[in-house]
Image 1 (cartoon, rainbow, N blue to C red):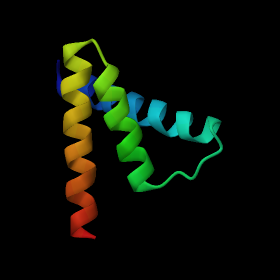
Image 2 (image 1 turned 180 degrees about the horizontal axis):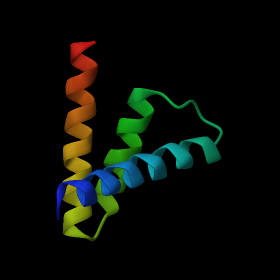
Image 3 (image 1 turned 90 degrees about the horizontal axis):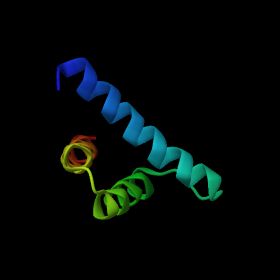
Image 4 (image 1 turned 60 degrees about the vertical axis):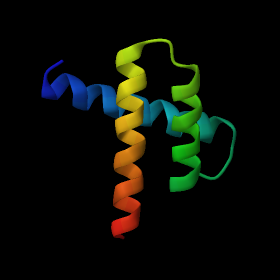
Length: 67
């Protein structure tokens, strides 16, 4: 997977997580987003998506620590 494909997948996964939070009418917070991404990762069957979810979760966590 090239860089632009990886970026598109990351955007898609974050979008899916955010939309699912919005559909539940819950708060869209960093913690909520990370929890939803973890849940998605736990049930994901595609190895590439599961690996990408792990990277996204780690990146969000790292950025949150910096702020």
